[in-house]
Image (cartoon, rainbow, N blue to C red):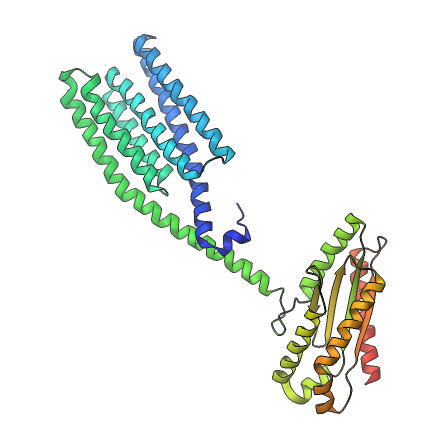
Length: 370
């Protein structure tokens, strides 16, 4: 699952989301394994003892537990309650299911099967709940300890010693595997989650950096082309207006060659602040193409409205840099712009071609003036 930007911005939210996904997969795995074990135990008992009263009790009890499992599964899929509560509920249900399965195995006298199935139950529980220790300890503790105590209530006294040894062995095995396997899985799981989170954040950061002009903080030409494609599609879908302004500020190149890069960066940032103040709507888009060329996308704006915006930006740019450049270079600053209005007959490719031609015209006009 691809994480959202909100999840990436908060590592705790991302880790909690990954724990939720792991728990959903683990619960499904554990419930499937318990159902398979129940079917195997039921078949084994039916073959050796046929359908007696004990088999009927076992079937009824497990049928009730299976129905509860379906209810919990439906609730978890509907996202009605928190995943932690669902995991605790599944842990209790799994422990009761193992108690039912173990009781039938003990009454059948299937000691080898009881040992094998017990180890399978322990390992499956650890794999299912290792990322959420409360559910893990509850399921193993309730399942194994209740299985140990049940031996003294449902079995004849002659079997108490043997069953006590078996249940004690299962309990010790569960504790040992829980300590070793759970800690190992948790370590590798958390390491993988942190690595994935860092990778997503780095990829998102690199993608953002690749779309931003480092000098001014404005978007670059690559991002301009991406946004233009989206806005053309939106305008075509909504049958809305769309205009683009291309601007060229002459004297900036001469200013850079005369006073250097650092002075030009300060000038560009001053111009950028003024241009941002001249765009009032959040959806208006401004990008820097080259050292003295800028592009503005104005969704929902016709040709007349775009010309008003262009004139307002021109005045702000002249106010921001005209005095400084004229004092240093002894020449006036002029801003050349072209306004284009999109219509439904123009494709995105044609629009980009028109923008390129307008940039050439603006540059030629600026060079001719100079």
